[in-house]
Image 1 (cartoon, rainbow, N blue to C red):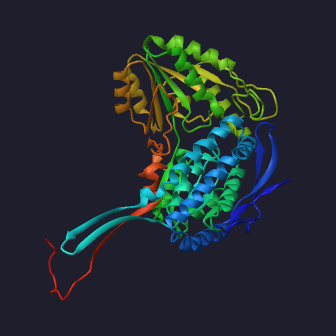
Image 2 (image 1 turned 135 degrees about the vertical axis):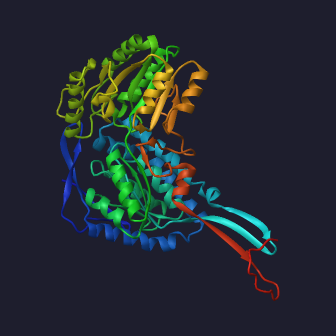
Length: 491
């Protein structure tokens, strides 16, 4: 059986430890490979390599760095199908969804190719007599990324292209559940001409995560995952003096008003709820039906949910693949069982699916209350809960009372209602007749409340700010002798 190894200093290595974990094909339920799990000594080796590579990499000209980025971008495009295939085999999502993931990640590489414009700083002439001042953005050093299973290519691509373009080196700790995409990215970076040690892949579990958070030579850590782990990463990383951005969980709402195109809203919400088996941090998992549209909306959602085609991600026509593990399937089924016991109405129940894989079909729950577990918990599966509100005021208050604030959407034909929702809802990303409002690479991705720990969002100009620090330089070139000054210059 294949063993998936680390990528340190430009080569594949088993590392020091003997621990490993199984990597499943979720569509068959079978173990297809094993992945090495790093020990603390492996983290030390990886960070030492990255730290040594930083000395030369951050001194390389912007022109040379950008040249490598452009080559990486072209290689990423050429190898989209290869990446999509391993993502589907290890994650379970459909091939089309996997290709879309690579494409959205590549947009960040496109953005990073223009890093020179964002690093150029500012210059002020003659700020005082014979004195000039300028500012610049300097790289941090070794940066680390700890990324989740649900987007094994896209989420890492949110991080390392910008970090590397800015002059940092990068250690990626991908999910051990679907680790192979990270190694493909490492080999593409090498083919693009990136020096060894600038990009490292270190597989592992909590041992590797905590070692990276504690390591004195790691300057910054980016994380995407559940809220409890995000809180841990932020607290432990910042306690060690690191810069940390930690994106947590979500309970994304779609508010539907009576004046919305209900057929279109139902189609958009169905795709957003059940695509990728609901394993997206931006998946719609709660619908707030406002006023008298609720019954018609639920009927439309139910009809669509019954028609979703469930199957293996490589099968033509599949719209919803398996979830990541057997334990995830059991957890999701348990949530649905408890929701019905709590009083929710199970309108569509497709939990039971044939085959040996980790399949859970679409489920639709109506008359869900804000105090029920199914609403308070991030289910991370193909389960959609419908709540009812009498007015837009009530709907906004409901959304804002939720502890998560990743994304929120409204479906309406009213510009006034949409504008008010966009201004008042406490979420980091808002969609207007768009269910999954993931920003383009030149904006930034991130939530509010318990969906983000840290001050900056991911990618875009906020990503550049996270992976660099400001430096201000003041200079004068004296001409002749001058008396000592005992006060601030004023002219």
